[in-house]
Length: 366
Image (cartoon, rainbow, N blue to C red; front, side):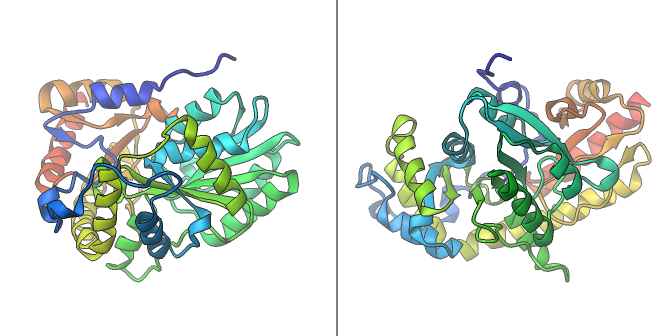
């Protein structure tokens, strides 16, 4: 099988996702710089950013509650995932990746020459993972298990006992477990409005767990590209050295802005919490009103992945774009063509009108 050299999903997202009423974006809309207390003297164009800029490493270490030597700053979660895969996989190794999942995880592993195997997260099981099925999918050549939590595209959550069991199974064949937690903070924001405890990072639950994340999706801070990998110190050092081939050094102004964000994180969190909790109620009311969509209420997260009962996803997406100036993500990008992914990270008025127009498009195709 030839190595994948590009991402069809990312090409679509960059060229066809945009619409007046965008329900395709999986993250919170961009936070304007004016909402942060940034002064010109806070910024410089260049600095000592060789293997982690000291003030940012310290701020992230404090924010995440992990030792600095376990932390690798990366340009967004995508590069973080690439670095984590590249130090744990060799060409010909087996990598077990959840299905459905974010397409770039598959593309990156394929680019590195790994053999892709899958563990199914089934719609009729609310996209959970059965550890017994995962165990049957492992081989003596499995070197990495790749999961997302919260799950992309459904926002399903893996609990701590399940993660611990998966890590044990990985250890039985000498595999690392990579968990992309870029949406995890949405669980903490939702926990503030209900009685369910927030999820905490899986890093530290087992020696073979690596975690990636960033400030991008939940907080609307994509532009500063503040991502990271959490790993044992030996693996972290290997990632820093490997990044010499890719990022060399990051944009120093973005590093400084990241420190400003972390120093004012309560302000950033309040904005995201208000938006997501408000928009989640709009989404759940919408889902409850539609007999043509199969889903369940969104408990936490920025996306949901309902199934169209008649399966006419392409017709829906065409009508939605052409007649109603709105977009959702077609499920074929997640290998489930009867589904659509709906995002709730846009401004509330855009989300509300987008859902209304989605309902109109559903009515029209039926």
